[in-house]
Each structure stands twice: as C-alpha cells, then as structure tokens.
Image 1 (cartoon, rainbow over the protein chains, first blue to last red):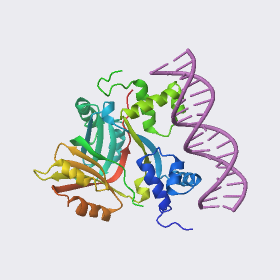
Image 2: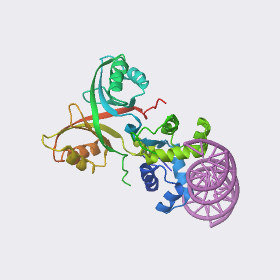
Image 3: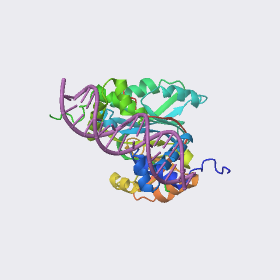
Length: 158
Length: 158
DNA sequence: GTTGAAAAGTGCTGCGA
DNA sequence: TCGCAGCACTTTTCAAC
C-alpha cells in the first residue's frame, strides 16, 4: 500500500468521528459508535490512529473568559524593525502569557497577535511594558474586540 | 443562598481546577482530586456548578487543521458601508462555515474575522463569492498566516 | 460543603470471524 | 480488518460528617 498525499490515510469514517467530537469532545465512544453504526472498538482504533498521526493534538475546555474576570480581548498588528528576526521576537513574546495566538503574516504587519486581558489597565500594562519593550518590535496597532460574534471550529464536509 | 455579581462565586479551588483542565481536558477527575488534595466528589460538584453558571461552555478537540487538508489560515479586516448594521452582516457571515471567529472591533475596521480554508483557491472562493457578496460589506483586507507560532489558552493566575 | 465508598457506565485489550 | 466480550478504570450518586 502506497501513500498518496501523505495525509490522506483518513477516510470518511475518521472525518465523521472528528466532526462529532469537534462539537463536543465529551461524547462517549459508545455513543459515536451507535450514531455511525460501527462497534465501539472501531472508534477506539480510529482515534488511536489519528492521535498517533498527530491529527488530534489533545482537547481543551471552552471557557467563558469574561465570566472569570478576563474582560478584554484584543488583536495586535506588530511591525518588526528591519533586520530583526521573527524567531527571536517569537521566543520573547512566548513569555507573555496574555498572548494566546501569534501568527506570522503577509500584509501590512510582520506579526499578528491575539491577547486576552483582565481589563483596560491590564491591557495597557501588557502593551507598554511587555510587548513594546521586546527588542525588534517597532510599533504595534491595537484592535479591541467589543463583541465576539462567532467562535467555532471548522466544519468538516465529509 | 443569594447571587451577588452572578460571577464571583468562583474561588481559588475552582480556578485551580480550570487551570489544570484548560491545559488538558482529558485529565480524569480522580487525578485532579489527588493533585489538589480534595475528594473526587468535590471536583464533580465544582465542575457541575461551573457548567451551570456557563463558565465552562463545553470542550473540544484540538485538531491539526493542516493534516486534514485545511492548509490556509487568514485574518480578514472588514469594512462595513455606512448605514449597514453590524447585526445583519453577522447573521449572513454566520452562514459562511469557513469563518471560525468574528469580532466587532475598534480601529480601522468594523469587523475582524479569522477564516480557515483548504487552499488558496478555496480562500479566493470564500472571499469573492461568500464574503464580498454580503450586503453592506464594502471592502476587505486579507492577512494570510504563514505560520501559527503560538496557540494556547489563557493562563489563570490563581 | 466535603468526604468516602458503592453502583453504573465507559474505555481498553484480548480472541474470534 | 472489524466486531464481540471481559476486566479495569472513571464517573456519578448518596448517606454521613
């Protein structure tokens, strides 16, 4: 048996399992088995395969950040100085716990970050003291999210 | 028992439970109980309380999107026409399955979206046919993520 | 509100088809 | 390769503190 696209050892059944689990990771295997009309053992084998392949990287809780005191969500466009390396900046930004996402992007900015803070004071502290002080970062532009209208996973078309 | 601010019935123990579970939602309750030196029943009660309060909204699988054929991740700044209402646009954009996040933001744009696509062709289709055609959307600006350097949850300081 | 143990259900690992 | 059945474990419940 030969590999084709290196990743497409994934069939429809796998995708359907992922579809169900991506909406709610707490569904028991037996329930998945019933819905897809296969045995529980099969689900287990497929899940193990996908974990081994690194397709499933883990699972995490969906938390309402506002309800535990993190009220401010903001996006940050980051300009790097010419000559500064992206990798160095990433390593420094990794230590800033308030950054929950960081992307290397095309377009106006070098990098793009999403940060979650307790309040506007906390945000100011993070921007001024943590981020702007990172060597190589020239300028940042802040977009505060007033409302998160959509937050979901990719929907797999099986 | 009376409710106060509706949210601050959360104590340190609750936060510690969340901390552990946010890193890996598969940790069994018994393991959490051992680490925090309380009984399994207590964890269960606390979890139920936080679910009822809406703090825990569910759990979901962490998927490596690239490995299942979704190779392109992009951010989108969206300009709305004057007079167009945000709510109408949101309802239409909600139907675009490729949008995984949508925020109403301050700054240069009216809205900010994160989209996940299979490839650049798919991205073009989504931009041209799905998003630009939504009534009220004047212009969009696209930032393609070349690398997702950081992707994590908020770290709660308990 | 917390504890500890008992009951129910789930996940895992054989063997057989 | 898939499906079935037994064992270990987790989750859940409940009475007592």
